[in-house]
Image 1 (cartoon, rainbow, N blue to C red):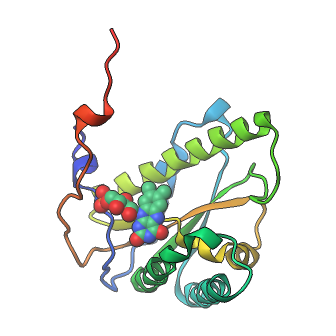
Image 2 (cartoon, helix red, strand yellow; image 1 turned 60 degrees about the vertical axis):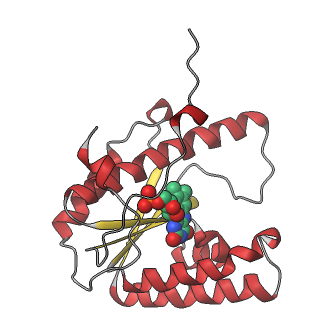
Length: 197
Ligand SMILES: Cc1cc2nc3c(=O)[nH]c(=O)nc-3n(C[C@H](O)[C@H](O)[C@H](O)COP(=O)(O)O)c2cc1C
């Protein structure tokens, strides 16, 4: 197996050391090399660092507060809010946050026809491949990463702050790791693999 696949971990403790622009560019370029449905390349990346990151974290925390106390987008996921707060604290330690958008995506509150739904699923699969490429490239460079979907707990606030066309899909935190976790458990292959001959 490719070593980066075995060595990658979700990193939740980062050193303060910055990542060079050259490394971040390589990471994004590897994301752009992902396969995409009909080669639509529906991705857009917004890199957030420094003061912009501090501003974004405030917005994120305000969103979580709204989600907790009024008009929740995810009312049945309240039990995950504490984890989302922890994710924001992790992001505060990471020198770079990349937001990944689906430039062809619809508003998540919009009703979709089955065809639009399929189109959306294909674009999101393409973006997921792009994110995974970035995580593996970072691993190869000794840079840690965390794929983040807790952004949905502050979804409208973050979209407004990003002020960009397209649908926000995920964020990824990058930084030099300050922890080296063991591999997290995986399901047993015999439980999830079916050969049909
Ligand atoms: C789509 C997706 C969303 C995730 N969102 C978060 C998140 O918001 N916060 C977090 O701490 N980890 C998040 N993770 C990381 C997972 O918890 C992690 O991948 C999983 O526990 C397996 O651990 P590993 O990545 O070290 O193999 C996310 C991972 C994926 C693929």
